[in-house]
Length: 217
Image 1 (cartoon, helix red, strand yellow):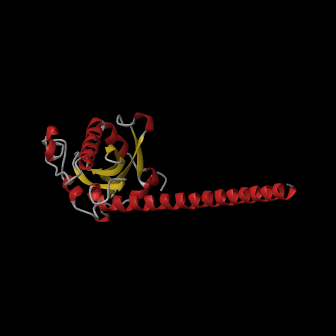
Image 2 (tube, rainbow, N blue to C red; image 1 turned 90 degrees about the vertical axis):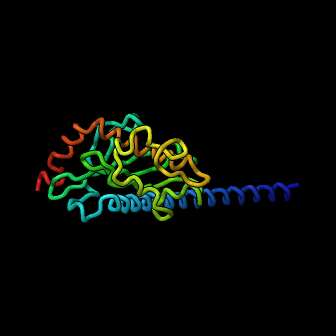
Image 3 (cartoon, helix red, strand yellow; image 1 turned 180 degrees about the vertical axis):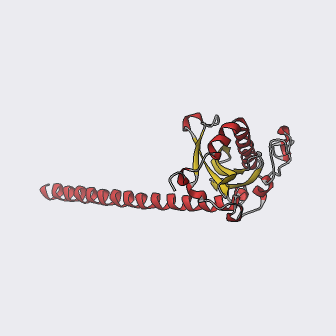
């Protein structure tokens, strides 16, 4: 009996040590993975910023020229909106707003929407999503040029009722077998334009002020 108890104790101790080691390994892996994912996301975001407003169209430090704007009605609990400002010789030429389409097929779709001072779309890029590969992932520029259809659009081009996919009476193409994803992106871009129009005067006051990075130069 004592031999059996000793054996059980040894097994329990072994299992306990194994659990501790396994848990520690998983925690370390998650820590390293989390940092790597965050770094990759930051790189993707930076790349998207310069795709929307290329360096040929601005000469400021776009990555570090960000301003806090009024809270977004789409997500009031998120606090002020942080947007990037593109400037040419100190004068603002456009802005890039973060946006989220909460109604994607597989959850949130994160976007960047570039808008000039007149409210015209300069470009749209998707920075992260979990849409179905081969269907919804056509919102990525490396999969298709669908997202480029927003370039040059505004709230009056097309008309408000036409800001939808063609299946629902709009002007934007849907994907074969995937209507929810493009519809969600179209809606998110339109809402970003509505946000800009609603706060345009306040936004212009903020971005036409001397950039913080130049105030003490």
